[in-house]
Amino acid sequence: MNRILIIAPNWIGDAVMSQPLLAALKVIYPQSQIDVLASPWVAPIYRACTEVHQVIEARLEHKQLQWGLRKQLARQLELNQYDACFVLPNSFKSALIPWLANIPLRIGYRGEMRFGLINFALDNPSKTNRPPMANHYLALCNVISHSKEIDSDQSADPQLNISTIAKQSVSNKLQAAAIENKSIYVLCPGAEYGVTKRWPTEHFATLAQQLITNNADAHVILLGSKGDYTLGEGIRAQANDAPKIYNWCGDTSLDEAIALIGMSKALVSNDSGLMHIGAALKVPQVAIFGSSDPHHTPPLSAKAKVIYLNLPCSPCHKRECPLGHLKCLKDISPENVFEVIQNLH
Image 1 (cartoon, rainbow, N blue to C red):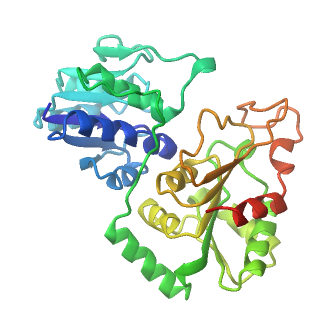
Image 2 (spheres, rainbow, N blue to C red; image 1 turned 135 degrees about the vertical axis):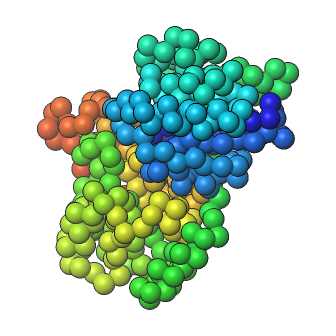
Image 3 (cartoon, one colour; image 1 turned 180 degrees about the horizontal axis):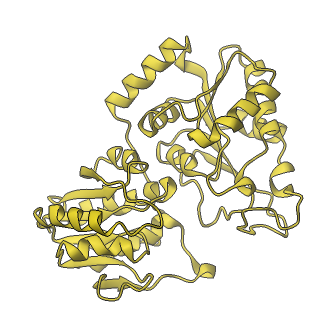
């Protein structure tokens, strides 16, 4: 097996969870070249994976077929003569490109109407019997592993590496803001899914104040997407615009965010893509769960601590609280999170 293509998932957390699959493929086929076809928003994850030879970026939009673009990509990829392709999303359109590119082995889980497009398909586990996503992806490599079978039931902890370019870029940003990097705390208030995954901004604000009060050298940096900028401003306002709290939501690339998280003293986040990045970088972290299930999408790191109240109504997996109280998040106090941070190693 000389050349392998990965069709990447579209979510940052899922992309991080796919790294153990790449590592396993390198164990099975150490001489293989692994390329990844990814959207621009998850491509930085694969640039942080040492197993990847080339990241091929393509602006494939959510819920759009983009038939012309897919045919064009398939023609380009066919020239690379890939031996196998792992299609990680379950959608019909994600399986089109490797089929059009005539890649002989097209491996993935059974998904929407893609019989024939995927020619080595595994059954999707039921929702009640789902393994962690990292193990879910890792199981795919056993389709071609032959004698070197990988135990996908074992703990599969993703690992990312920070590029030198991203480190330098972040160092320049910190220097420009007169921030010393010895006591940086990164707080990530966002979660793409919605409010039921977001710890309240007033709690983040109280926690930020506690961290700064407790440590004279502490600086708190808020990270997230452009859509999280307002959350960041809300936190700064409720913390009385403390001068050591910086709202960098939407002001860093994902490559830079990876580097910044990697050099932080501790990370506090909701169940989000940045949470999984922190786990893959093995930084001390606190992960706050509300409506989602920490058994299915936990931060896979010995340095991570999960705070989850496990209320009778949790996990509901709803975008809005069906009961209207959001106690699963509101009842997690900043004092509790601060205490956990103090005991991180």
